[in-house]
Image (cartoon, rainbow, N blue to C red):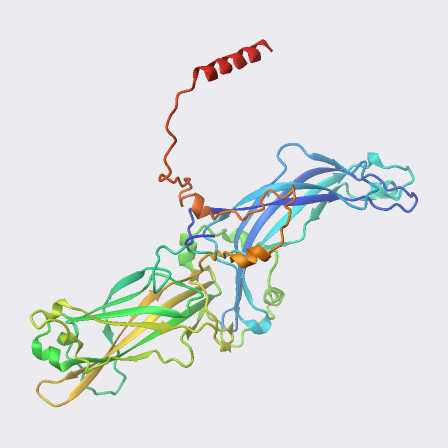
Length: 496
C-alpha cells in the first residue's frame, strides 16, 4: 500500500484459485474411474486479525476485516476429467479473483510477549469449494465408489490451504533534499521550564525574560527506516530583550533524544473505532472466533491464563533510538551569548542557528518483556500503536542584575516524528545485466515485467494521471483514396 492510512481508499489484491481433479485408483478395476462433479460454489475470503499478548494486559484479539467474494455467478459448473482420467497429472481450472483491500488496514507485524510466542497483525486468504459428486461416469457397476455412494453425503466442501498475505505500507518521498529524503518541517514551539522537585529552593531565571525567547525547531516531515541520522535545526531569537538582558543571558548546551513509544491495549482504541470501519462486536471474538488465533487463546477462554501482575487496560514501552555510546548532548561554542548575534542596530531580527545530525542506532541490542527493541514505522491499530518523538532540552544561564549569582534553567519541548518505509527501486548495474544469461519467456506468462505502482498511474481519488507535457498529434484530414476504400468496405459488408 502507498500513502497514509485512509478509509476512503482501497487497493487491489488479485490472483486465481486452482481447482484440480484426479481419479482415484479402484481396488476392483484396473482402469481409473472418471471424476465427475458439479461445482456449486467457490468463495474466496480475505481476513485480517490483530492480537496483543503482554504480562500486564493479557491476551486480546480483534478481527480487523473479513471480505468474502463468490466467484461462481449464476449456475453451477460441471467439471470432469473425462479423457484424462488415466493421466498422472490432474486436470486443473484457474478461477481469477480480485478483492478490494481497505486502505486503512495496519501493516503486518509481530509484537508482544515473546516468551510465550509473540502475537501481532496478520492477514490471509481462505478459499472454499462446495461441490456434488456425479457418479454416472463410473466405469463399473461393482466399483467401490458406487457401493459407498448411498452412505456418503452428496454435497461436499473442500478448503484450500491458507495463503498468508503480507501487508506493507510505503510512502513516496515528496521532495529531494541533500540532508533527508523528505523536506524539513518548521515548528514554532513554546519551550517550558522543567518542573521543580519537591523541597528544592533554587533561584530561577525571571519568567518575563524567558517569555521573550523565541524558539523554532526543524526536523524532517518523515524519516525512512534505513536512515542512520536525523537532521535537526534549532533557531533562537531574543525578541524584546534589552541590551543588559542580552549580555546576562547565555545558552550553554542543548540535548536531543529520539524516542519510540509502543502502546499495547486489551480493548480496541476508541479513536481507532471512530476513524475506521472495523467490524461490529457481533463479528468479534468470542462471538465469532478467529480463523487462526494464537495458541494461548484456549487458556484464556477457560480462564487458566493469569497475568503475572494486576491486569491493566494498556501498557507502554518506550526507549531511546540513540546509539548506546551517544548521550545526545551538544555544547554551544563560544561564550553562549547567542542573543547578541547579528547587527548591533537590530539584533532581534536575526536568528541564531544551531544545526546538527542526531545519530540513530540501526540495531538495538536490548530486549525486555515485549521482545527485542527495534525501530518500527509510525502506525496506529486497534490494539497496538507506535509513536515517535524528538525531545529537546535547552540549558540557559542568567546573571542576576543585583547580585553575583548565576542561575540556570532548562527549557524543554517535544516534536512528533514519523517513521515510514519508502519503496526501493533497485536498478541492476551494466555488468550484472551483461553477466545475466538470456531466458526465453514462456507464452503463459502475460505479466513478465514488474507493473508500476498504483500511485504512478492514478491519483488518490481514482482518476487516471495524464502527462500533459506530451502534445497531441496535429490533426490531418483523411485523403480521398482512404474515403473511397472505406465506402467500398461498407458496401461489401452491407451486401453480405
